Length: 435
Ligand code: S3P
Image (cartoon, rainbow, N blue to C red; front, top):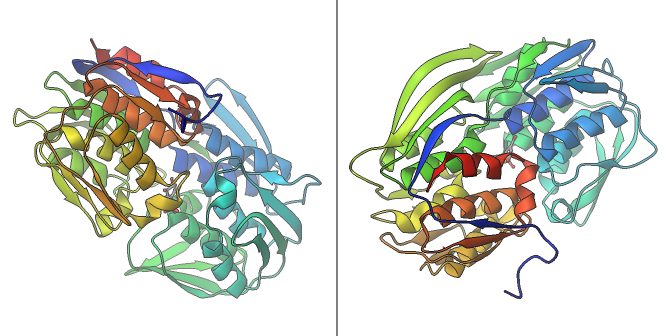
């Protein structure tokens, strides 16, 4: 108990018998970040419906308003008037809060803007690796100062040259930083990715009027392009839905309908894994908005029960945000869960490998930790335990799911962290849980 995050909100989760009901997820976090940055940079006013309610995309929005955009929200619509391609350096540092997406992607936008910009973040963000964006932006000519590879980040922006960037790690944030710098550079920037990461930036840039080509695994963006504001609806967040999908797998009695859900193929590996683990997905409706696939799905558990799975290689990169939720149901699977090639988990909002392992053990589970993943044997019974979220949103939510099948109540300490991506999480969980 002594290692529990001090002075934090505690939520008590009681075991459940099933998960039933329908749900509309708040707007996708990744897409909301991009719409905030691009609408704030574009010319004209954008109207964004269903902007994420999470604190992270609001950090992006707040940074853009500090840089000269304006934003107001009425009901479900956020109106953002952009700075028409000219961002002014504010007197105060730009506070990115807990959001790695804000800091890394904004750096790409600012690298080409004249002036000095200082980007700061909270305790967690201040130890996350930033060299990965400095390296390509530097080779484009940007002057970026870090403290031992971390924030605070000082960007002295100026004219940039196009580069070819061969991405050494699978990161959509780094790709985005290079694309946003490339949009303003001299010449045509190209990017190759060995593992294809989420492509929301590509769709969003096109929706805001930029031209972007792809040949094979190579993306090209010409510099000097202007963006125009747009009206868009943000699809529901599949990574937030992941917690309920995993919870649905725990019970025979589950039946969930999720509507207006983002199903972009670069994000939807989770649905394949859900089926591989023993879930059934019925697509009730599907459409497209500004390049993003959106649909309504009905999910339940197949009669065969919850199987097990090996997750590794490119799949680990594609599922990186969903791995904590999957790990949390690992002990309840029949054949166990083996996760590898997921070293990036160690540099997320927390060291998610260490924290998942520690919290699984706090519930009495057997688990073997590896540098790049973990082995979780199946067929285990867990007891209610005391969970430390480490103030990491996905850890708080993942263990609330594990708690649904535990014997006895579980305390989630640092439960307030959920609001980084999904403030409504606990309310939805309580209304869907069958007890
Ligand atoms: C994100 C990309 C991923 C993901 C993060 C959001 C994005 O990070 O983990 O939650 O919106 O581009 P990396 O790009 O660092 O892999």
